[in-house]
Amino acid sequence: MSFALSNHRRASPPPPQTFKLVCNEALNNGRFSFPGFGTFRVVATPERRARNPKTSAVMTVPASHRIGFRASSDLKKNLRALEQNKFPKKEKKPKE
Image 1: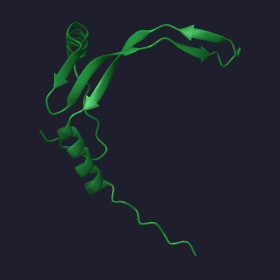
Image 2: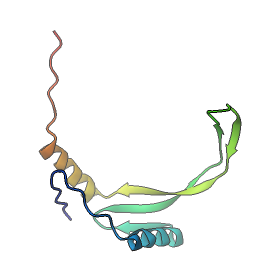
Image 3: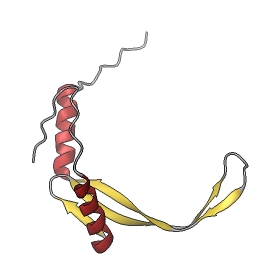
Image 4: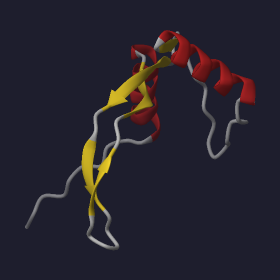
């Protein structure tokens, strides 16, 4: 799967049903794989201590779950190609 990106154009947002599908599948099955794009999965976060920056009070943040994302190798490969074509690496000037 290849991605064609043009300069200074924004893609239209996906329909809301797409997000509902990803969320429902991830919550029901623990993961949702989108071939050529990546995998969304449910990740458990442990209970932790945090500090309120305003009052400096220490509090406990309860354990919860979040959605994690891992990009597919195809997406990573296309992003690397995009970086090489559009954003050439600048050569460092030698220090005098």
